[in-house]
Amino acid sequence: MKEAIQSVIKLVMERVMNKVLVEDPFVKEEHKAKRPLYAALVPDEIFKGSHFERRFVTPFGDVWEKLAIVAANKGLGYGVKGYNIAGNINAERLRRIQEVLNDLEHPEKGKKRIKPDWDKELNYILEGKSEKIIPVPVRCDVYAEDKKKHKKYAFELKAPLPNSDQTKVSKEKILKLYSMQPRQIDGAYYSLPYNPFGKRENYSWAFPARWFDMKNDKVVLIGDEFWEKIGGLGTYKAFIDAINEIGEEYKNRIYREFLGVEPPHTNLEEGKL
Image (tube, rainbow, N blue to C red):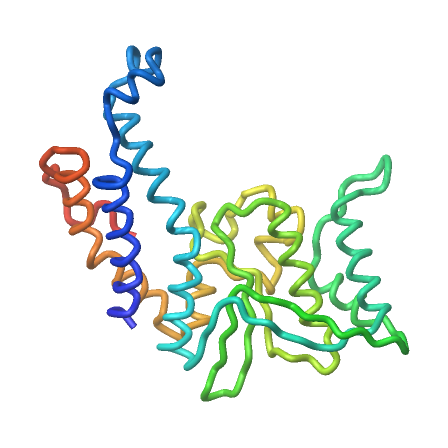
């Protein structure tokens, strides 16, 4: 698993390095011509760093999904991204799904916004009965199968600081997956690859909190919870070890090849995940 994880990261990092060194390097003269005020007040190195950051963050948009597939294939046994799941949902359940989402998005006039409560919402939706059955397709970000336990899982995998619209769409998908008759999966989850706030109880990004109780909803997986679920026990440690093992190499290359300076002599433990 470690080697597979590293191959994904190395491929992306090589593309980033080629981008910032060959295809789209930071040109000091161009920066000064476009932003003379900024260039007069702020050292070029600051903007050179932001130039790198923008070209680093964008390619990593779909890396999490690729890493999740690696974890699933090496751990549970099977994983694929962009997977379509089709099933039947009765009309009343579909109506109740929209009702729940509308209530979360638009509170009644003069009343406080309703707080999300996964168990309460899902129980209400599953109580919906109707003779009218509607075929519904759901395309999940990541689909995985535990080959030993014969379990099927769907994951909506988003960046650690997702926006509100993305989260609403994900919640609707997950509610539909749990509402299918018969159910096509054993579990569906709203997942974040890591927690920028440290512990789960400290997660405080407001936008997804409009749709999920990010600290308590069992359908939410953050950081190690996600990696252990999709790859099995030990996956999170394997992921962290794999990234840290190649991190120093790329840091040194960025110092020398992009910034044009020698890497500082630091404690080897600094900067590790």
